[in-house]
Amino acid sequence: MDLFRSYQLIESGDGSYDLILYMDTEMNDVEFAEEFGRIDEENKKRLNRNIIDYIKEKFPNIKINAVKIMAGSILLSTFMLGTPAVASAAESPTSSITYTQSAYNYNVKISVNGTLQQFRTRPFIYNNTTYVPLYDFGKAIGASVWWNDTSNTVGINKNGIQIAFVRGSSKARVNGVQVTMPNSIVIDDVTYAPVRFISENLGYQVAMDSKTQTVNITNTAANKSGTYTVKAGDSLWKIATVFGTTVGKLKEVNKLTADTIYPGQTLKIPSEATKTPAQVTTPSTTQTEQKAPANNTQWPDVTYVVQPGDTVTSVAKRFGVSQQDVMRYNYMDADEWLEAGEKIAISGYSPRVTTVKPGEASAPARKGVDVDWNLEGKYILERGDTFTVVDVDTGKQFKAKMIGGYNHADIEPLTTADANIMKSLFGTWQWSPRAVVIFHNGMNIAASVSGMPHGVDTITNNGVNGHFDLYMKNSTSHSSSTSKVYIQQHQNMVMKAAGK
Image (cartoon, rainbow, N blue to C red; front, side, top):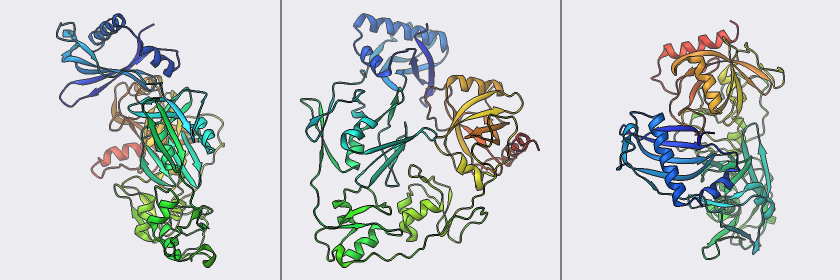
């Protein structure tokens, strides 16, 4: 069996590369990492020689700066080559390898309100961040934990605070507001989350006892003032104004890290407020509930193009509407966030129609329905979804994941095997698109996919660096400078996939 099952080259920008090597092991990633951390000097030398031999065999005439060793999603160690050497010269005495990072630290304990916790899988420290198994940690603090395998999302809710994120992502939503967090890690289908981020956003205090290697998580003191139940159309500003307090005080006593609130949520009112809950019936609302039309092709009067840095909260403030309405009008789930450049609805529902329904197809096909991307496709295929791609001409299939996009879908093959199948369709990576059918949730949808990897790469061990463009009917480019010929090629392939 080969020591390394796959690799990835990442350009350093000076003509040289960093090399990521994925070790071939059937062990649990965490257990393997622990064993790896115990290797002796002789085995280090042996691994050194294996890496040099691997570089020489696989990458003649390529300059390698650094080598990272991975087991699944876990970084075991980073090696620096003594000089950025071409592989054919790698056996030179000047080309040495030095350890710069050890394996994970599993000697960490978690205490909740003074009680040490025993989880089914061990917590660990990675890149100075402590990770805990999310489900077990949720049980320990009395929170509810949910997950959605279709969208690859998980969430934890407690004390009126909802945290949701795509597994492996560095972005999360706290009560609907997008924030940055350390990447979660998935090992053997167990989601490990950064414990400080989760705890502090749920209103806990976190402290590390370096002597005992214990993370102490404790409740903050409870506020004894009155409470108010949030109604549809409320905002923190509106509630603060009615009760004679400030948004900052409301957030402080409720341990809120964001401005988003939701109907039914119970808020504590600061003791220094000039009015009590008993003196206030309910903050007045300026908007009435309206249902989404069954089939709607028109935008409402007020729309907005998302700018870099925008969040649901900032957009809601800009237009004086509730965060709930922004999400409702644009059919957003709790774990979704806005993308710069996309058009959203403010005063009513975004256009949406229904021509295909989940479960109407029992298996992938080589002919699909020409679904309009803007009216329907972008609501069917969402960030984090995995699906089957069927090549119309050959019938070959591979799995892919949507990683983002608003004018079209940006996708990546799931595994190295999927990437190899995809590459076999194009011969060599190229921009010219092919007609394909997307099989997702029991629906066959006509589409077109190009064969040139580019830009952001989120799946590090799938044998290709970058993502691919996937178009449906009336999809267009994210950039105004993209060739119209390229866009039309995609549309021609979509019609071919639809049998037209």
